Amino acid sequence: MKPFVGNHAGNINNQQNNLIMSTKTKTPPNGANGANAPAEPPTYRINPEVEAKIDAHIKENPKYWDYLQAMPRERLERTVVLNEVRELDRQQRIREGVLKQINRSPELKQAYELLVKNVPDEQKEDVIAQIGRTTRRAVARVQGQQQARGEAVGV
Image (cartoon, rainbow, N blue to C red; front, side):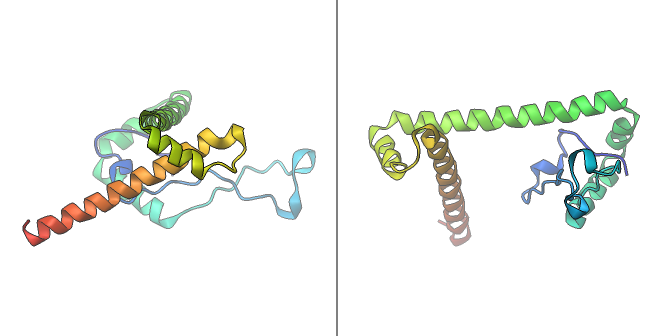
């Protein structure tokens, strides 16, 4: 099967249960690495659930699949890199937004500083951003559940 990439309206990334394909390779047997490693191509893990989603998406979007298959390899590779760059940019924007929100409130900033008081100084901002993202997701999840319950009850 040829690789699948893309970011468009029907993208599998928009589904509620996001699945990420693993790009990690299996470790060489007997700890072989470097100059001693055999000249075999890497073996990639296969996740049947991810493969099924990919197959379903291909079946639902045959024109897009044909478009990808017709792409020159270099263009396809650059598309994959572009998607990774976009994802990294998105993560950075989220991180900056979380830190900006925390820094706007002195009480909130003080609470986060208290949480990370024992973290090394060079890691504090990263840990604060991580806690902030996790908190933001948890709050959004709870609010979504409350809205769903409110609609079900007829409030």
